[in-house]
Image 1: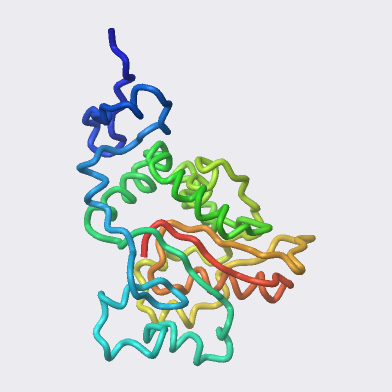
Image 2 (image 1 turned 90 degrees about the horizontal axis):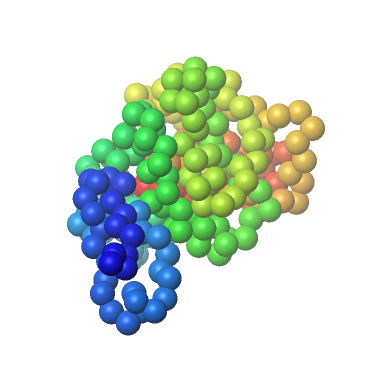
Length: 238
């Protein structure tokens, strides 16, 4: 008799070995989507970190820190055009080699099911933030067609939330190939859909990776100008 359903890790596809004990036998645990070996390869962001972008200060030289913010965020906040556009970014993990490969498999190779791995994390954090609107960063029509889905929307949907599709992308060049300076000086890459009402709303933007913060700040700036009361973001990796 098989008392346990044998789930396989969505990353390495090995059987997930359940913990044997009274709790496992007499209660129904949440479904596990990742094995312990793969879970240990994910580096959670902990400890002293930038007040705005969640960058761990253990990862930067003291010369690139200005009080409680990293040098990148300090420069964003120095610029009157961008000052205060993004109140706070929350990220779960460091973008290490392991997570880089997981995200590449997820969004570039169409393995949508990998979004399930992070559903409980997103569910918990979103409940804590209690936003009025959850806005996924949109893809260009070309990217959406190539991938078959928007990875930011997938992370939201698998966590049980409905995405508020308030933005569309008007600049389709890949920002991942651009330098920080090129990203900052891009023209606005998004537009707000007509008849969108965000006045007085707490908005949380959703994306997979926070890199320089340019994409999120472009979106945040637009929605703040449209009347949002606060703009935060939640990303899988930093």
